[in-house]
Length: 291
Image (cartoon, rainbow, N blue to C red):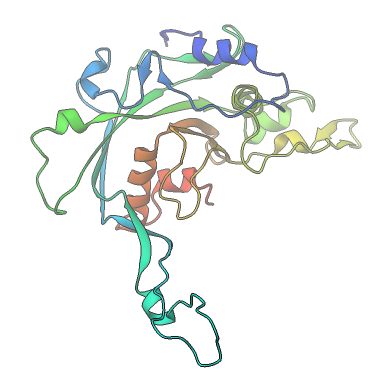
């Protein structure tokens, strides 16, 4: 198979500037991909095929978030007090909560891919091959659930995420690897740490080598495959607070792994799918690292 731009310049250039271990690298969200910024309309991507490889939709009402309460003062002075002290009326205060509303409406996600396009993460010749590369576009509008697609859909349909797929060693392939040889998954993780620093919950543990009867060393540490997330959603999980998050995940059954760039709007799409009609949504599970 012929691939397009095999040198993933965006990753390689940033990685060369980062500290080797990623210990002191501050997370800076990816600004987009291949010169395209988040929020650009679909029509600006001239190389993409006219038809998407997949389309999904979801709907939810605007989500309320409680911020606090406004004290409703008593208008009388208790007998045991000699001077006025501000006292909140309990029930009245509960009825005067401060809230904000986020998200909501109809969400449509469409995905596009260029068959011959692939990239290498890291070194142009030895880096991990990322293929296929999937561009994601999100449209969101308010209104009734059954409302037809708005006339200005093309203006609403904007760049909201990227999905980079790659194959890593599992099963028999994994067992045949020398103990000190990293899998494709390990190499991608190391490069992402160089680029973005440590993901949430990450810690480096000591490696334990075990000599077997056949004099083969087993390195248990580098064979662990977790889902790692940079700037994931907090609180109610509706969306990330960064302009984009990064997620590394693996399907241990197939050996297919992915790196996801996800803007807040893509997070909202997954939240709407999971919580309002499509329980078990695969994108939501990956973003939230659910088993």
